[in-house]
Length: 289
Image (cartoon, rainbow, N blue to C red):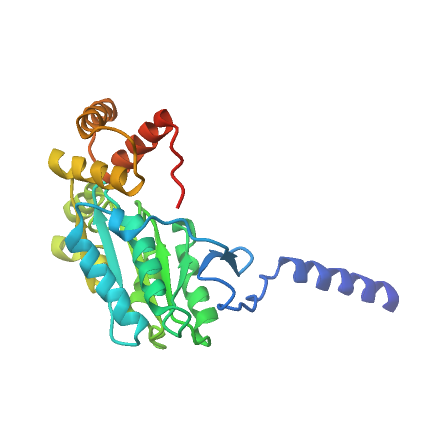
């Protein structure tokens, strides 16, 4: 093979390796927006022009969870010690809505000052890239809450190790200007049958699932959400109706709300909101603002 041919072959190999190599993390300006979505494949934080959220006063029936998460977020915004938070419990009870509402409230209270927090959404499927995201944020000044909605792990899923490393801090330690908030329908982030199977097959049952179950223990703040009763459900309906000034009698509204809950087979904040949207549509009322 001639020298010229060898050079051409090496150039093609080098070009192919460049295409296969992972992209370097992209520089990000965290002052570009209050919300971002993390894309691990391109290693980019994409700004969100407007975060979809509801006013925190509209979240009814979860007064204790609201107080806990808002206070934790306020402390974090002020540079005081704060905890990573796990919001767990029944579906449709307002877990993810509370995270976004608390973020919006604290930023509104901060005005244009330095207490404004960036909310960064990471998808469950990209949890393994958390260390990379932290590395990108480590040298930046703005305070950030990394948020993962509907977090859980299945059998043979090793992604929890990346999260565990982040929550523990590893050798570098978690950056003091970064918190992690997550929501889940599972208290221990994994199905109960997975825990039971591990325990049955293990020589030391108590140690078999310790590593996986202890993951949830690494969240300093646990906030539980539970199924609501009819009184709480109707209070949510009334709160939405009053906020949006729906022109409907309370008795008629409650009748529609109860029928809606029966057809859905559940009572929750999500069901209440869907019912109000349906009623507003029938009344010709736009739910803006």
